Image (cartoon, rainbow, N blue to C red; front, top):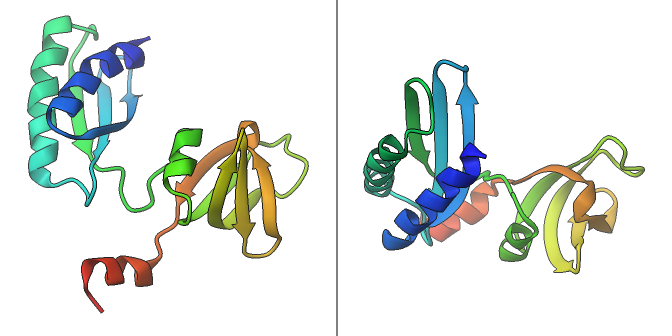
Length: 160
């Protein structure tokens, strides 16, 4: 419930700063919470983007008093190996390398590593390095992350 309230508050702040709200998580202990907000934008986020979002959210979270005790607010980029949180993320990152871990009850492989080819309905079309092209039901995915392709990253930034 707290995550949804934070999302309601963070989405307009991110939009005003021309940022994408990627994910929110709450960690820590009962007496000392850690609120993590992940943001992104085309070309990646800067330290200034994180600071701006942190400033906006710090005042907002203090005003709604969601937590009984103190909390720490962390705002950061999801990183190059960002987690894929929704089927929309798979659509967005089609063509990119990823690692997909399946839920324990999934009857095929436990994990796939390769390229996201496309999304059709609720299935991810994935080219696994070993199994070839497979259709993965989104409901069977436990966790998925982009894989860093260093050659691609260096070519994108102009480094060799």
